[in-house]
Image 1: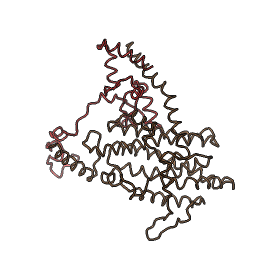
Image 2: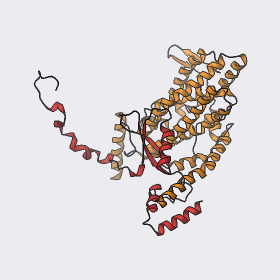
Image 3: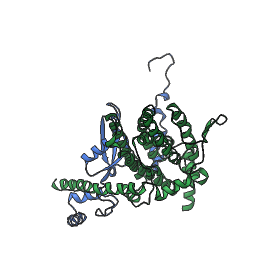
Image 4: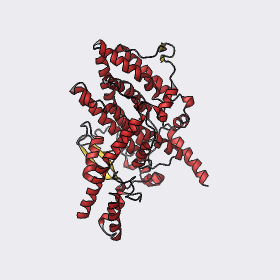
Length: 132
Length: 313
């Protein structure tokens, strides 16, 4: 099996514009040889978001491993929805998420910190007025 | 300059922890914190997974359909808990496969309790009551730990594990109120599991080299001895309620401290089991290895199928 994968990879590397080449890179993001037993078969990491009732936001629940989106959904259901308290699941390949970095969270969120005029308390209204 | 940066970063890290903030995967953390967490979380994950084996043994022999569906659901939960925890460990930049290889090679440990055999049905009740009970005490603390993903995984686990303890206690209560034979059977299981369950909290604090650092970084919020005491205090009244005797002649209530004093734990036995010489160590690892080997073709097939579909697209 591993040899077969190696052959396949070799032929793919020779035509690296093929979409499957890109897929391999996604599947094994650490550039590990996909033919090594250590990585092979665990699949890529998917982040799982669950919605607990209609109208509620999807919340991050954790992650799972899977080879494709269908299996990812099934694994996510088996791991995060064993008690019927979930109405919807999203699975997202972990390496397609771009996140803000904690190192620049200060300057990154800074523009919002000094805009007190975005809050209702900033505005003075006569005390007798109700329903504002 | 780099050393100075490190000191400033460490100060900021510790002051965040002291302020009760959670540390998230992308935040700066000392290498020791990361290493200790990987060790703890992976041990915890392995314990959930290996923990399925002693109980899985009894699924086909459960005495009724009601007991069988409960045990099936419980064992499936343990698999799920293992997955929550591997997922939390992977946020620390370690590959799940690496962790599994460490388990299979014997390099990583799992809870020593799962190296004891389940001799009869009463053991299933007592495991739910003692082993899951002890785990809940530990995990309730870990749900408040300083590392966000580990804290969240434990929160999820705690919500589910209450049913495990109750199903176990129900089995014990039923047998304790049964025939003389059933009563003796459940008392025998209690006698065998009590002391190993107390050992689950780990060695005494003065002999636990990691404790101080883990407490300082709020990976743990209570010492091993404090948790063990909490478990004893919770369990003694539960045993009295169903007329079960805990096998410790020194067990007595101290009105001053409001705690149950208990006898000396045989740590020699604990270390012996941890080192691989318990009754079932070899059997458990062999079962894990077999499951890994037998499942390999399924994982390979899933990846091969995906590759085939992508190429046909």
